[in-house]
Image (cartoon, rainbow, N blue to C red; front, side, top):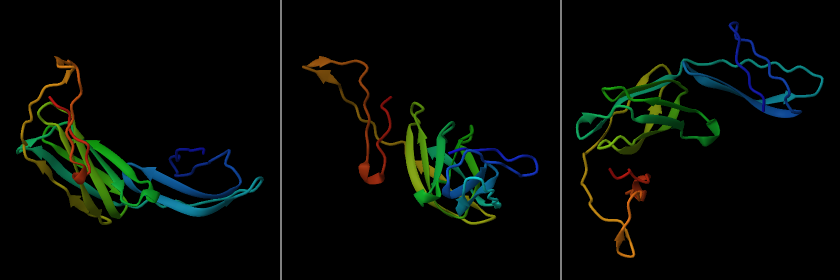
Length: 178
């Protein structure tokens, strides 16, 4: 379906919409998402909708592994209600810090991933966001054990194979071997 950006005065026009009942959503990185459902659109008629973005809340935290900051980790949040369709992402800075703002109140699943050598990282946790507040989510992992092995085919070594470890009971596929 068509999309548009709001003008300086907040106005917008969506054109080329199909006849029927629509849900209309507005999103901005600094505000929480607004959604209006049940908007009736008919050929030859004009429909008007007001989308009120909220202040929302946010999530801030740090990502560490073995006590050291994980710089450049990708942090994703997704509203725990898939129908809400609210997702945001950020990267950790040199001190492993991140902050995501403009989230509407509710429960979010926070995912952290990094493929940096010796800092490979996969984690997730649930975080509750409250309007006008910043939730703290510090994610840390121990350095972990090392696993050594050999990839072969018919007894001959195979170079360039991709090796991963996973813990399905924790909800992740695993980090790459380094």
